[in-house]
Length: 336
Image 1 (cartoon, rainbow, N blue to C red):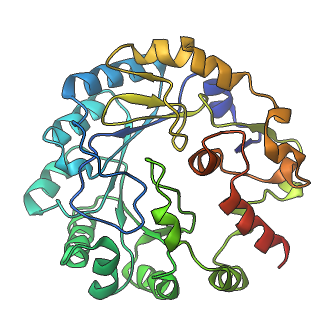
Image 2: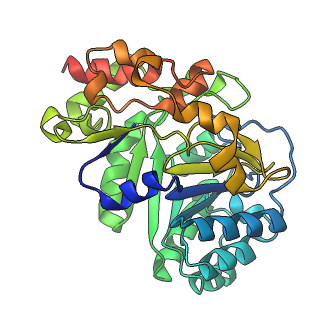
């Protein structure tokens, strides 16, 4: 759910049915084995260079501004640097989501010349023991720290992102302190999704009720991320991120209607992105959904809850369902 208040840019994209941001997964391969990963390990071919070029061409013509390349681990794609260069030639704002393992002095120099907006790197704790436990990859902490330093020393904007699990919850305070001391841009997230093949295994690592209560008391869970204050909500237009302002493309060329909802609306091996985005029956059905179609509309907090439709789909296979984990956080915030 997105809130708009006098935002002419977003209104422009909504009016013309153009995704402001495209998330492109270059590969499903990864050199880590993170315990909480929501991607299944089923082998699949990488997104081809030709399909990606064609997609970027269409997005540029439509007017999309931002492209985020991810995976798996995007640096494992054989054409990674060529694809970044092509996206920059098309004047996209380019962001990269990576684990940092593949960065070295040589390719960081090449990467800097491409002028990405930012690189998001994952870090799960302040020690090798904890980080490597979560990634199930020995030496991954050392390589991540090396990547952070190489990128920062090269003047590339870096965002350090921490997924908070019950196993590393006790490190969040230390991570915030470390980030401040090192001058890192730092973000974190508590919400874990089921795996994209339906497996509930990642949910075992969600923070406990006791940890959630502690996080709320310490102010680590920001109410503004879950509940829009009524003072801010007044005069604000509410929209659904469903075939509106973001899209996602998988390594197998599946097109999804937002950055988080993995509901296939078409495939670039069969149809053009433009035809999928503007003409597919699946997109038409999503865009005609009304307030009463959503279970959340019957909740007293509906008007100012920024509920996660992607989480609802991942948990229940329906975008109109109630996202249970989101509700757990909202209830805790309400009881504060």
